[in-house]
Amino acid sequence: LLADDTLLQRVIPYVCKGQLGLTQDYKGALDAAGLPTGYKDTLERDIRTTVDMAETKRRMSNFQDRLFCDNGPYTKDYIVKCIKAGTCTALDIFSYAGYHDRKKIVRYCKAPDAETGLSASCTGDEYWGKVMWNDLYGACHTFNPCVGVPLGDECSQDSDCGGGVGAKGTCEKGLCICKACKAGKDCKVVSQLVPGKGKGARFVVNAAADQDPMFRSLRNSVFTAGAIVHLHTAIDEGDVSKGFGAPPGGITSVSVKQGRIDNSLAKFPFSECSTLARTSEGLCNSNCVKRAQSLHCCGIPVDKPVLGRFVPIESKDPANNDLLLTSPLLLCNALNATLQTCFNKFAKDASEGLICLHGASSFKTQFYPNSKSWKGEPDEAGKIQSFYAAESDGNGNGVSDQEEDAMAMEKHCVWRESDDADEEKRLGVECTSDEDCRSSTGDADRQGRCVEAFRAYCPSKCDERRISVGGSTLDKFSFSTTKLLAVEELALTTFEGQNKVQQGARRWKPRCPAGTDTADCFTVEEAEAYIQANYAMIQVDFESFDEDVTIGNEGVPLFTLLGTFGGNLGMFVGMSVMTILEFFEFLVMFALCIPFFF
Image (tube, rainbow, N blue to C red; front, side):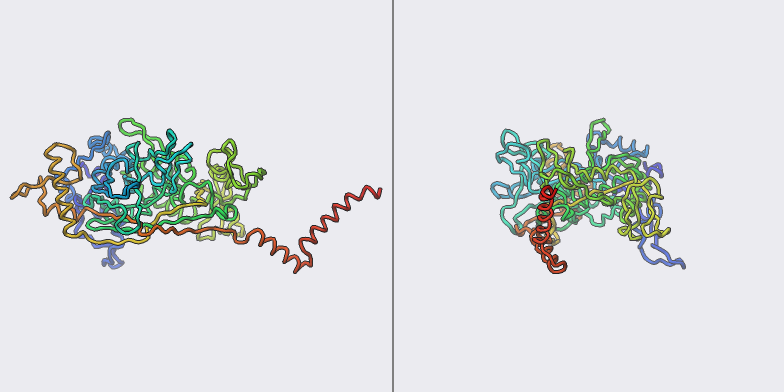
């Protein structure tokens, strides 16, 4: 690759910062007189005006600390081949060098056992979920995926094993079990039994900040080196943009806050929540934008998200094994230099209201005659019939009738948010041409546009549990912490080298013998410096088990409404509800007496 500038420029966004040579004479943005005004365009400008290609080649050719990133069929030969062909996908890059091996990242894990409350090691596969791939951040490793599942409780069906945070268990042989962990069986749950700082989980991770791909991180607005941690339930799993950074060289202590939204007493149409919702609003809207980016930037057709999530996307790895992905952007060409510009365009369109309109836009409430199912309870066939389309599941597939109608639209009318789109009565109405999108104001300059219907049907859940960061602190590693971690990693790496087993941590070398200092080993001082530059400690605790509960009630209860209605009748019309009932009684009696007059 170093012999071809064109190929090298393709991979520059993925080159580690230590191997990049940068121009020395760049002065930042210039004013009309040619004087520098600062670096305000440095993070977004063209790579070719930033990178010193000759210096980058020299550094890369002299780079000795090979990582040996081969991961099954994702080998060095395969990656070089797809780079030369210009066809490497984001999944290819991540699978080869995207921290797919959790054990190389999570170096230490301690958490209280759910049964005994005693601190125990939690590095095993029974505590962690299978690796998931995020199109921005690469490999994601989920800790405690079975939390909330009542493991070992008696059950008669799978629904008896549901978790309070959306986790799903399975009923086998009359007992609840969970198969969501990487081990696939005998999954374990970590649960803090005593509130307080230091009573929860503690992790030490090798964030490998020295391997940060500088340009790609800047393009994705990842300005903090280190690990990204996202506290979530099964509802917002995958919405990593809501996470926080844990920088290397320090201890990030996080206080977890739990809350619940309960609108069970004020369901649709008295609120906009839905009992059929299964995804957080943020993740649902994000997936709508990703579908537009996939179709128009990557040329990858993908079905519309259902219940806010993509149907698992089928693909193949280099060995022709089946893959199921959660984001179509993982299949985009990672070497396409114009891809980010196209992504930004559709993100801007979404912010301006041109794509991903609310899925219920333009719909009128639809009524159903089945009055016995006012509460939206499923019948014998599992179908939910309600008075309202937003709460009705007529075919029993778990998707509301209103969402199915919304997603069936091919084109609809849109206006920009800056043009007071909410005032347009035809916003979101199905159309065939721009003529169908005339402004309700009659102004020719407010003509709407008939565009492809990207709709985001993202109602909030009526009963949702949320996990968030209540507070956090950052402290530097103490001398003793740095020393201890360095000695342990050196001892482990040296042992693995002597016994010819797989290297545990990335970029580590065995301990240098006394009195020597070569490039093939680490001294204690070098190990301590590496710990300070690349390792991060994360402490996650419930300092309190209190839960913030937000309950939605009817603004005006039924009996209050009837009392107000009757009082207004008496005040302004001079009659009461009894008067109206007596009038209807008169009509009925008159109708019954008519035969006696003829």
